[in-house]
Image 1 (cartoon, rainbow, N blue to C red):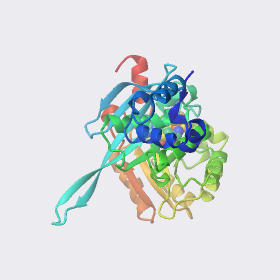
Image 2 (cartoon, rainbow, N blue to C red):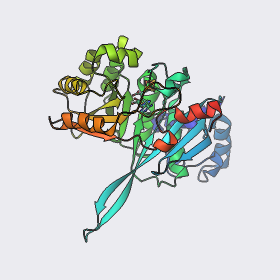
Image 3 (cartoon, protein in one colour):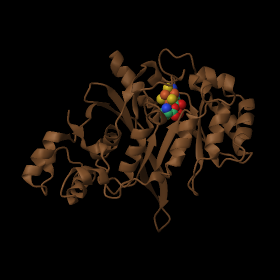
Image 4 (cartoon, rainbow, N blue to C red):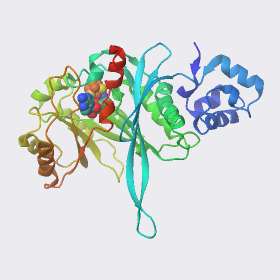
Length: 356
Ligand code: SAH
Ligand code: SF4
């Protein structure tokens, strides 16, 4: 089978492809010109292009579906060489900026949400990705390619600032090696040059792997999917909590190297009548005491067949108000692209059920 060229850092390519300056040229073609074949790489000699084509592929993913949301978000379904499918989402946020005369101009901010596995072993009760079970890890190149294809498809110039969140399908820390490799490839100055402080890795809380990730000193941001503040409830929502309880997660976070200008993000998926009461907010406040953190309250996004419900706006605001009035940074996140089921796993599930 052909090797995936996106699996390699530039310094690895330097060893594999001689003379070594070719690695830089290939990186430019891949991540600045979004080349879809070696043949396009015209400043490489023909015989090298032919040889590369025999050994490597530049197209490990095939787009099989795209859905546009009213808020401008776009959700992609990609097929891997073995037929499995994964999702990635382009999220558009609008930043307010001002012209010199004081009038408002809007600046699009791009965030790409990427998958790290086909399916997920963690098996959270509220998550659609979990329903299909676990198939396999993605390679670094398969992770990298999601962003390259989305930039290409949306004509996003190579030097345009993009943020990455590892919040698509899968548990990134259960595929630590490939995820770390992808972070390095994304941040290469000759490649996509996405600074590591613009990359956020979200985890259901594999404490020992959080420690390991911290030791890599990559400078990435950490997001913890907490969702519950006592072990008993968390265990029913997230079975992984039996192996890694809340205290072990908090301890690991306290040791995690955090960029001076950043905070650790705690994701709290709010489910009606399950975890939306003020006593939970109170406990959350004390859990996060002493941690430079921010909390993201997320509306549960319902799907067919789930017993869980979306909380009311009033309850969300009350929960937030409790925290912010006591000094915690806390935002409410409307699931972006709600009308295209942007919560992870939802597009793929439709495709598998033949609904889409
Ligand atoms: N496995 C990692 C990375 C995936 S992130 C993690 O869990 O952190 C996927 C995010 O989508 C998680 O924060 C999860 O809580 C959220 N999510 C899953 N199902 C959802 C739903 N139905 N509505 C809203 N968010 C959901
Ligand atoms: Fe896996 Fe995250 Fe879904 Fe839990 S929420 S099953 S960890 S993808």
